[in-house]
Length: 275
Image (cartoon, rainbow, N blue to C red; front, side):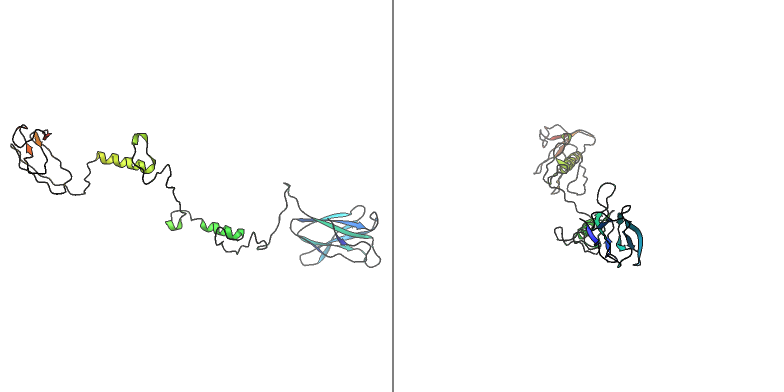
């Protein structure tokens, strides 16, 4: 809707100034009390300079130039050429619209820092929580503050990651070892399989105790070898002869180089070949 800036048929010398923001455009046009605009009677369009002074920029006169367009940011007004002599039947009105961009959208809009409570101001503190009532600027600062720095950092300065306890690729702490050839039940299951496979192939001294070497001379039946309490594993090597041995919780002849029928060597004693 048009806004009247200068009433026709009055002796007013000039209109009040109209300020335009950046992106706004005003269409100024002549009006009259007569049904049609009288010829050879017009107004002068003025723009305000940076120092405050006004300068003539255009003469509005029917029928050749009855309208003009002014684009902000600026201030404009209209002035009668010879005011005060008699009422002039010419006046002026204007419409303000937002300038259109090439894509059909709205023109640029300038919002002063802090003028919008939703957008906020550059000096806003970060939002106190994710659900706080705060400006977009405050939430942006909170978000930026949660982003860790790039590169190596201690856990306190890094973004925490919580792994799901039932992650199919990693597995859970209770996963039992499964057969390696057919696949494992997650990463922990695979590691369990690998450990079982390694320990079954290696002769591991699980007690971490130093090994102790003993030599028994076997002519017919050797002396008994008492094992230290807590011994977990015994290794026997037959040198220069075949032999049989037996393990018992009681004192028994344990090693012989003769047939099992010799006294002290049970028929079910274990056989060790020479070498």
